[in-house]
Length: 416
Image (spheres, one colour):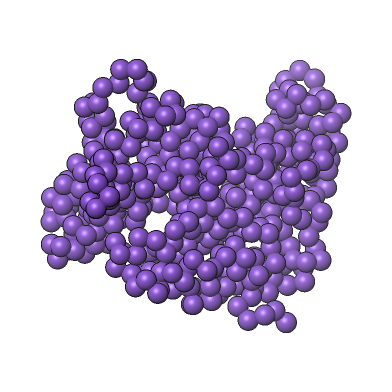
C-alpha cells in the first residue's frame, strides 16, 4: 500500500514503463540516445517530415535516421502518417510525434495560487486543476497536491499512466520571503525554509521530479514555445504577485551561482544612503501586481481585479493608470541597467494580467526608455510575451519533457 499522502499510480506505471521512458537525465548519455533526442527535437520544432528531410536537417546519415526512427516507432514515441504523393520517385512518409508517447505534469506553487497541468508528448494540455489561497500553508498544501495528482492520474488510462514520465515543479525561491510586505506572520513564512519541495513531491509518486524557480519556468515556456525560438539572448520579465525574471544567453537559460540570475525583483530603485538610512526600495515594491492590489484595497475595491479586465475599467482604472506610470518607470530603469551589463538583443515582458494591460505596460515602458541616453549602448527591442499567466505552470511541465527527451539536458540549467 502507498504511504499516506502518496499517489498510487498502479503497477502498470512501474512494470509497464519502457526503457525509453525511464529517467534519462544523467550527465552522460550515449551517442545513440543523444541522436535520438536530436531527431525528436527536430520533429518537435519543425513539424512532421520524412526521413530524408530529417537526415538533412540533423546532418545524420540516412541509415542512422532509419535506425533511430525504427526505435522511436517501436517505443511509440513517433507515428507514420499518410504518404506525401505527387512528387518524383517513391512517396515519402512523414514522421510525427505521438501525443500518447509520454505524459508530464507541471506544478506551480505560487504565493497566491496552486496550479497543476497535465500535458502530452506534443505539449498539449490534457487536464488541469487550480486552487487559490491567501498564502500557501505547507502543513496542508502537500496533502492538497497529492489529492490533485490522484485526480489527475485518474483521468489517464492504465496505458497512459505507464507513460507518465516526470513532474516539473516551480515556486519562488524565497517563498517565505518578503513576509512583512505580504503581511504574513514570520512563523508561518519561515516554514518554507525547512522544506525540500522537490523531495516531498517525488516521495508522493516515485516519478523523477525537476525543480526551477517560478519566473525561470515562465522564461522556459517563452524560450521553447514563444518568442525565445527566434531571439537568442534576452531578458525575460514576468509581472505576477511579485515581479521577477530570467536571463537567456545563446538560447540557454542561465541560473547563476545561486539560481538567482534574472532576479529583477531585488533590483534597487535608488542609491543607498548611510548605513543608518533605510535600504532603497526594490523593483518588486513598485512594479508587482501586489502593489496594484494594495492601491485597490486602499480605495475599498476588489484587489482581484488586478488580474482581469476590470483593472482597465472604472473605478479601478484611475489606480491602474497610476500604477502603470510607476511600474513602467521602474522596469525601464532595470532594463537600462541590464543592457549596460549584458548587451541584450531583446527584453520580453509578460505577466499574470490581461493582454490589454500588458499592451499598456509595454507602451509606458517604451515611453520611459525614451528618457534615457543610449549613447555607448544599443537599445534592445521590448516585446510582449506570448504565453501569459500560464507561463509558469507550462514551463514546469516542460522541465521533465526536456530532461527526459531533450538533446541538451542543461538547456534550462546552465550556470552563468
